[in-house]
Image (cartoon, rainbow, N blue to C red):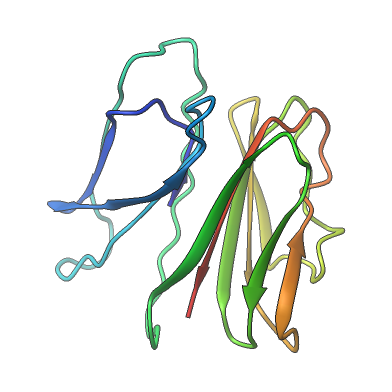
Length: 155
């Protein structure tokens, strides 16, 4: 679950505290949390505790994945690049989120996303189930004024 955040936050789903995988440590505004929630079905409670920085957006994008062979593989967080490259293989689940002045639709990425989402005024996200690509996969949100991105790969 990518989340735009300020450090000292926590994310809890149905009583399970998620793990912070990566964040943009420089500007502290975007992060990736994940975890294995072993109980519950249907709607689940997601509790986010926010740190300081009340001026920041608080956009959150949630994905669920079942039947993963391995789970978390890798993630990356960058500032103001407009693209990110991750290593994938067919069947991998990839998701990405951005903070930008103009949110993009990710359509120029190496594979069209399964879905693209917007949140608030500055948050955008997309997800993919990788098809025939093995190796480098470039994520391109396509928006304007991108200041932070995070991308995660799961298998």
